[in-house]
Image (cartoon, rainbow, N blue to C red; front, side, top):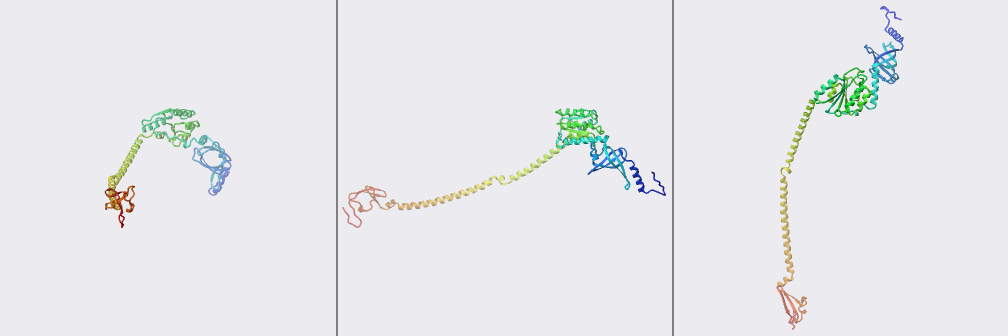
Length: 410
């Protein structure tokens, strides 16, 4: 029922707001098509921002978490959905919201949801693991290129690569890059290039396009084949925002085909500059090392052991000469003392020797049997005696004896 108002009898704002709430309540449950602009999950409830796909209009919605968990494939931000909602108008705040009890992905939103589900399954198998990534060769002998015939992607890759390194060689395999048979043709192409021993890296390139156009590069069969290749693969599909699943399994993702050429082929001018820088750095290092070693050699040569090596020998020789002189004097002194001792001992021996006594006029008398005659009374008249003098012996015969102090017999 329309409100009866006039300039003289206006309706309060709260009355108008309440009337709006009553009218909204009469709508009941309605099916609405929209795009999920933002999705937040908190405990058992979910808050969504639904946006019209053509008009600049958005509204807040809420539902139980189980409602979204029941959606297969799961919905994500940006997905298009059809929801069963009951509008609610809060007259105290003057805001409109939707209470959802059913959510269904449709169109592009459903496609995004299915791609996300596929991505999660393949990631759970470890096909996107960083340790599976292979390093690209520094300078590939040959580059395999899988792209569309007469495409801008092919032209960009070839021009940039040959400008960076004129001698680079390409083996190009043309395939469809969109449509139902595109994924199968790309699979055959990458297998062919992987079997080529002269192909060191493979580039799969395509220009930009819609999500539907890029679907072949999210094909599960293509992803598994690329993961099993021995040759490193560079994915250059679309532009920077485009992220087909091939980007995740490839050994390197390039934002554009031009970027792929820069990633695969080194720039000859940059490499020559690096060589010059490295050569200069090595030369400076060698020069510095030579200077240090020269200074060290000068320091070693200035040491006495090397600057005057004979000085130590001379010092030792003088010491040896002094020791020799000291030893000679000591030996001579000892010999002199020993000579004196020997002379004194010889004199004493000579003084005690019987021969010395004989030299003084004494004689030794022995009998014929060789016994020394000790006294005159020991001899008999007629005994043959031997008289030893200092210069010889006398053979005598006793004619008589005359003991000391008595009269001679005979």
